[in-house]
Structure formats: C-alpha cells, structure tokens
Image (cartoon, rainbow, N blue to C red):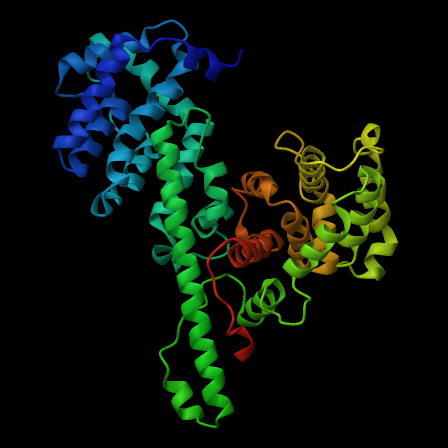
Length: 428
C-alpha cells in the first residue's frame, strides 16, 4: 500500500479537521493578503501565530506518528482550501501565486518560542521536504497558469520550460492535479482548462481575421490601408509562416478531400467493419506511413513500426477488430511514437521523427492515429505531460523541438476537437 492510499484510508483526525475549519473560516472572512500572512506565519515561520489554540493543534499534528509521510497531504489540503476560494473570484486570483511564493521563500526569522523549538524545527523541515513533492510541483504549475502569458512577455528563452504551461490547456488535467486532489480542485482545473482553451481559440480567430483582412487589402493594392490595421499578435510561439502552415495542414476545410479527418473517415470505412485484428494492423501501418517521407520511412521508421505492430497482441490476430483492441493498439502506439512512461521516459524515436520530418508532420502523424480513435485523446495528452515534466526545469531555448511540438499539438487539437472555424483560411 503506497503512502497516499494509506493516508486516504485513514480517518481525518480531530486536530486536522480543526485546522482545516480554521483556515476555511479565515479565507471566508478576511482579505487574501491577511490570509497569506497568516499562512506564512503559521506554516513557514512556525512562530508568532496569534491564535494559540491553532498553534497547539498544529503541534499535536506534528507530534503524530508517521507525520513525515502524511504532512505533504495535510499541507496541500490547507493550500487548496484557500486556493479553491480565491479561484472562484476573479479579483482574488492574484493571491494564489503569492501564497505559493511563501512556500518557496522559506522562513526568515529565528525560532523565538523556545518551548516549541523542537516542534518548529520539525515543521520547518517538513515544509522544506514539501518543496520536493509532486504536490508542490503541481502548485507551482498552477501559479504559472494563474500568472498567465500576458504578465510574462518579457521572459527570455533561458527561462524554464515550465513557465509556459499556461499555453497548453491539454496538459492541465495531467499537470495541475496530484494524487490527493479533491473533486473540488479537479473541477476547478477543468474550469481553468475550459477558459484557457476558449481564450486561445478566440485569440487565434482574431489573429486570423486580421491576417485575412490584411491579405485582402494588399491584393486590392491598398497597402497604406492594410498598414493602418490594428496589429493582432500571433498567439502562439510559432512564427507567422509556421503558424499558417500548421493551420492549413490540420484544418478540416481543405476542400480537396485531403484533410486528416477525411483520411481517417476513409480508413475507418474501409478497415473497421469486418477486418481481422491482424488485417487491421497491416492496414494501420500503411495509413500511418502514408504521411511519412519515404526517404525517411524506408531507412528505418517503417520497419520499426511494422515490428512494433506485429508484436501487439498476436494472440488476437484471428479475431475481429473490436473497441478494446482498437483502444489498446492506439494507446500503445503513442507509447512507441512519443514516450513510454514517466518511469521510462525514453523518446529517441520521437526526437528522430521531429528532426527528420519536422514538428508539423510529426504532429500530423499523431493526429492520424487520434482521429481514428478519439477515446485515446487523454492518453496522448498524458504522453506530452510526461515529456513536459521531464524537461520542465530545462531552459526552453534548449528544447525548441518540444516547444514547437507543444504548439503544433495545441493547434491540431483546437482545430479538430475545439470550436475554431477556419473556413476563411484560404484567404490568407
């Protein structure tokens, strides 16, 4: 039984509940800056808290058996009691990064309450240990999302990749939720995700409208008027040429039957009604490699893919294709094409694909697979969250390949699973 399961199965102690109720009352009655200061004094400094009863409650918690295993969950719940309240009020959201900054800053004063010296030292050590947990990492990511891109225009490429997380809503449910997240927090994350996704689609639509108007005026020979249009900033980290290329590639409004959606429909119509599992895998190989440059595919990739597919569930080869086999095969292919797991984060093939066929066509390969089995979308998102976590502290200008993939996937998912209308794209 792991630590979280053990903690989850135990009964919340009266002392813990008293602490939670106290914080809930404070956040309901007091302004955020007062609550943040309370939190800092109670948990970070450990001395000088005005409510002596709560101090005694905290000392009892710190003296409990196995507290070094459980404290991360207690402190995380305390944080989320405050965060869930502030998150539901737009004018209070700015307090969330301030709260999380308290955890990072550490104590500033000496231990002045000598009778509590042992308890305070234990508290400070447990809070320091908390900074190395999944729970703290999730809180830091949430802070980056709340801060948002508009307050980070000045950031340089030397900043960590993790500061870009607000740009990628499809990562939120995997990167902003930890094992002990409450249903309330999970709902909060889904709400943040929906808002961020809508904002990206609106920003992209405004940018495209601007580009269409600009192109139309230039074709009409009125460049002076085109130059007077209010510029709309490209909402991605791709340059304008890369963005337009990706939009055209992933759009379903290509009009010539060559869109990724059209290809997926044809594949499903031809191969999923009466095919055996073995026949399906052979057809799937051709469907996927059709989007790969033969010069690259014939060198190594096509054979690697064929070998991997052949090894998937050979005991089912003679059986008709069913939903279970479809989902299992597509999810396993994402392991092969992107990354296997957080425990085995090898992704040499993925990087090789990007280096040889480019980020947009690599994204197209993943989209081909996703469009024939939409149920594995969370699984693909999980693969990218593993890579994001793996490189989170890396300077983003050293993983440009991953940034471009994250941007391209954001566009591909928005076009094929969102509400973007790009029927006017051909006017650019």
